[in-house]
Length: 542
Image 1 (cartoon, rainbow, N blue to C red):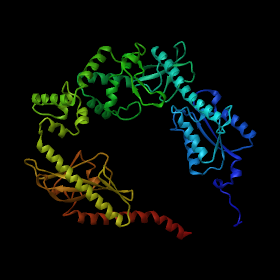
Image 2 (cartoon, helix red, strand yellow):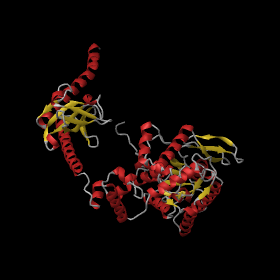
Image 3 (cartoon, helix red, strand yellow):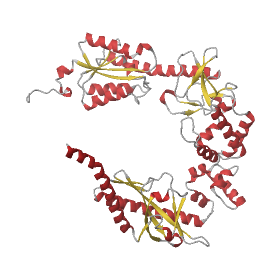
Image 4 (cartoon, rainbow, N blue to C red):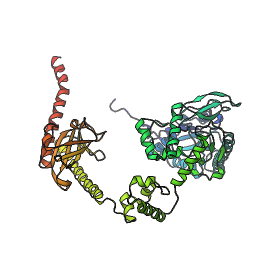
């Protein structure tokens, strides 16, 4: 048996390979004649007539032929052929359009060329010509590829024309419903048949979908959003309040300003159904259409918002969303500075006639750079404090990297999470790095503050403690994260409260690092011993 011949499927003799075939089948949603079963039946008949054995099937079901993305069957076929791991000499395809209805007709020719180059012959089982490389077959194949591409273009035009007609009648044409609205299924006489939950589709092709007000809770939220914006509440403030209340969007996620901005512009809330604002034909990029091409059906939906409220919101949005040059943006900002005497992010957001702060940041970068361009120094002490804090934070990140390297040298696995400013040892021990700022208020003793992060992992905290006026490093302190658990946003401590908060001080980081490594390694060894003890006692008893 040790000398028995082992035949690998990718090393089959050529004569044996040429008796074996693979089939590729694809169905999108065009016609039943292209069903997987019909294709397989025609291919099986062809294989029997030519004495071929089908040993492998590559299939793409319910996938568009416009592009290769998401077509795992075709991708796997090409990868197998290119790698030389095939155990067949023929590839059987229903017809030339099964490669795809690519808008670039050379793409399907490219995939056939890859197969031929690897020694795999391609046969089109339902075509009236032999794919033998002759002049006639080459001409017919190219015509078939052009016809396949043209079929997609014609079908896309017909589908789009039908959708435009139905949209003009007020029906919903695909896509999820807006927040506060729901999709309803109606029959050909517009009689209600049921409601569609997110992700559900209508069953009958003759049925239609329309929009209607949804759950009362969501409708009330929509009304509240419009009322608040009319009162002058900013979009960012609305977002914060909704997230504070725990209200979720249709997708179950938190609210964002772009979501609110989009909602405030949707005419569906006053009963108008809009379609063809954006198109994406044949897999191309999304195109925003001019208003004259939009399809609007007024009164198609039961309104949630009063027209007068919507007009006031639209006017406020138009004033807030100003299309001006960068030079004009800075000129208007200088005028606001002269009027207010100072500038802050809140003042910029509230000023009429100014673009949003987000727009300013998009054009000019940081807020400091914006101030520099208009000659405003702002609160220089604030910028100095910000620069100093950035410097100390960068030093702590370097300390975190050094500590991770030290743990690695002891045989542990240590990773640095820069965003959380944290070192994770063996996937279970967390060491966070913070900066303790010096504070001295009139009538009180000197104290230091640590910012408490809500989602900080439990473990140890290594704090760089700053000296008088936060100008230099005083020392380092080490404390368990549990010391911060029962405090507010800021954790305060003084020299006299170090012991009560289980805080240990060190003159330098190296001294702290050595002690922390010993403590963590000791704790990890203890936990490892505890996990192995039951196994040892069990083996001893047996």
